[in-house]
Length: 195
Image (cartoon, rainbow, N blue to C red):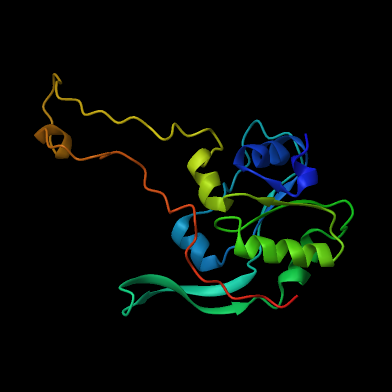
């Protein structure tokens, strides 16, 4: 197993580190982002063997608001969380013993900033989650079971009962039952956090 040593794990490797090797997941997304996009499970799965848990400590505080110029909701009012490292130290008081998977939305900008801050603070068992929460959520459901993706969707034209709604009309709606996910790549231009 070389992925903890290389400092990055994909969603499959991250699941192994979390469930079998004592790593906790540190979700560093803003509260507004977690509320809008989704969160890691609140309850641990039955096959979870280790002491790892899910923690939410935002690296950057931000609001999710409608931007009339862009014509869509966007992250605004970004500011570095001044309590980020003190909260991390409270959760993980021993930098040598802590095992942490750092996760932002896509495992890029903010995850790298947080990994650098943790490294500077002496944390040694730190791993970035490639693809972040967005790819994790595409692979694992709320009970951390593997999702059946990319999925094959088929319309049922024959049935023996009365029906109503879209499916009964025979209308072709592409992937009508498909679960919608955020793009794995976060297009937000996040601020740089001073270390």
